[in-house]
Length: 307
Image (cartoon, rainbow, N blue to C red; front, side):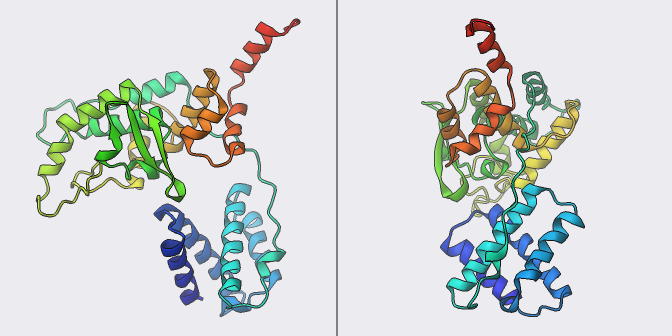
């Protein structure tokens, strides 16, 4: 089973070109599947029966309490994996065909109010005591500003290179899911925060490394050691400054949700927001129209004859 799993993951990485975060999700899902199958006495994935897969999925929702969104993603992994086994001639029948996709709940994304966003963006401040260490609060401030201004995912932050910042036209080039590129405006506050980071913080992070190593790899945001910042560190930065700002349960994707919601509430066209977010399907973007109904009610009151 493990040999088959490794071959499948290599296929996703090399031939499909999936991003590291997607590879990690597939890996976790398959490891969970194989642990359950081993408990059922299955020693080879190719001999898996439909009822064993159905039982595995039931355990996820009933015993482990996974929500519909997580189960749905896990099911997608199972289906793709067994389709790959079928396509490569390792199985004759696909047991994954017997699995039905659950109806996904229309769970509304968590969104910060404009005042909460302001508190978060203003949270990074210099330490009270002077220090010779790089002013990482400038980096954190630039990251927060850019994530909100451009609707970035946490995984996209570390991928931004110096050449992706186009100062003259005020946009950033972003490499999203499926290696799809998009150009997104940065906004003046984000540009100012970026410039201050580039002037006062990043050079200190570069000098901390040996020039011959080129640890930075031309990336924009760096860690304390001069390496490109990783996704998990972006999570830590957002959670830290949210705590400083007194905001409960704040995570990186909330800045992306807030970006989209605030644009639509301000009257932005749904198609434009779809392009800015990099969504291939507009139905993915439409969920944000259900988050903030303020502008809808205001429009009805203003324009309807009996509003």
